[in-house]
Image (cartoon, rainbow, N blue to C red; front, side, top):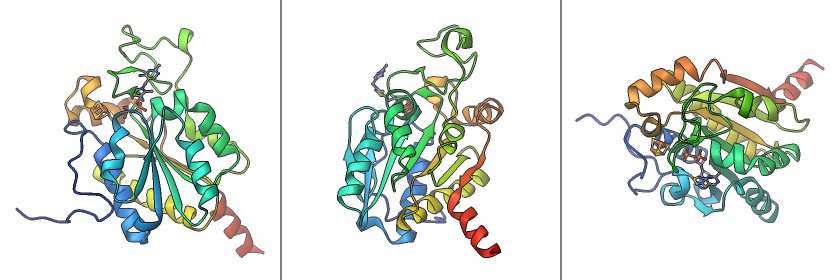
Length: 255
Ligand SMILES: Cc1ncc(C[n+]2csc(CCOP(=O)(O)OP(=O)(O)O)c2C)c(N)n1
Ligand code: SF4
């Protein structure tokens, strides 16, 4: 067997606890590789959420704290303010970040805390059996919406990148996907850039990764990726929503 690339030092040797074909593993790899390439493993603190990635503390090779539902950005704020020499990131799913932790997310972003938020959006509460999340698509079935999400009752999916990029001080907001090799390469660049901005003290960076939950969607991993491409990307368009540091640098250059 040809091994193209070995394990990254940014991840431990622990076996991932995710379902086969789940893209949480890919997201972990991108963060682990980026930490290794930036030489920051020893000085990084990760904040793990509730949800399927609750065990992230077993997988990232940096220090990791596991915190209660939705509180990751608040704990990250305290952590970074107490230890400004550390790189602090949160790793959160949509149930954790966009439902229970809405307030923490929005206020940390409004203050533009110098932290990085990695947001894995699979449009469902994966760990607890596929409940509807704020990101669940119109018409999409969930255990709490067995007939499909009815927007007249529950509103439309919340687009976090669009919301957070409206806040004055946030620095970098990008939505990427983990649905194809090409997209994963792009996602890696966004993850690394977000951590670099964090190192440079530029304020809040937020990278949303469009993902899948083959288990709760009742699809095999490949079908889940195709389904997400067809159905999630029109609702959650990819792209850079804000890059304040880059814009400021451009303006300076033009002066
Ligand atoms: C209404 C509600 N409050 C609290 C919980 C507890 N809970 C367990 S896992 C989880 C996070 C949901 O998962 P998500 O953040 O979408 O990540 P995933 O498991 O999909 O990776 C929460 C909030 C719950 N299931 N439902
Ligand atoms: S339940 Fe879904 S999100 Fe959770 S590990 Fe399995 S496939 Fe991934």
